[in-house]
Length: 237
Image (cartoon, rainbow, N blue to C red; front, side):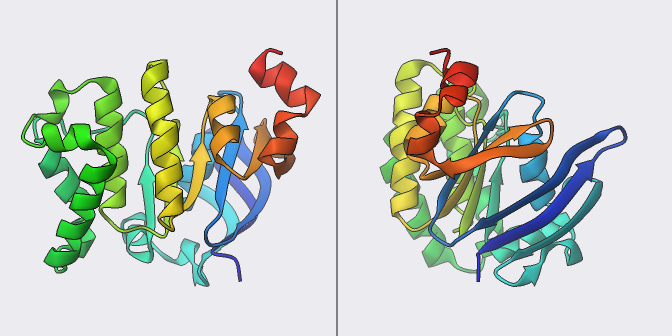
């Protein structure tokens, strides 16, 4: 049985339909990327999984649990962490306070939370150095580290990442690349939405290409990277 199984997903807000009949299965331990243009519906896909889209028609399950049967605030308890585009750190709280909030659902497991916090600081040493600093005073790259670390504090089985490289300098993007691989090697299944096609296909093993709310291509990342359509449309070569 797949960890995440989505069948015939249609989603909209108050206007036109954004996603049209998307189906995908993600096995436990997979690293999947979703690429496409800005209006393709990539973020809506993640928001639909998290229960944040008001109008959804889909058959979706996570480890056998019907996602539509749960309100959005109960979905993280299943083991799904969503790191949204734009970081959304709490600027007036310290780095460490932001991270602790990510572990709220595990608040009765103090020892486990401390272990996870130590792992986050090992993965992002810069956060350990700035643990008392207000998150709003950090650079964009450091705030992205906080956002990802906050997601990891819930000990997720599935990590949803929405445009984590957006607005980051090339050096920070490389650090992000390495961190994503480390997270995956630790046993976390990852679904990555990313405008940076080169980054997405370099870290994920499989990828889906969205266009106008539909899956138009899918396959191994290496094969898609060699596909002339992908190279011309998203890599400019």
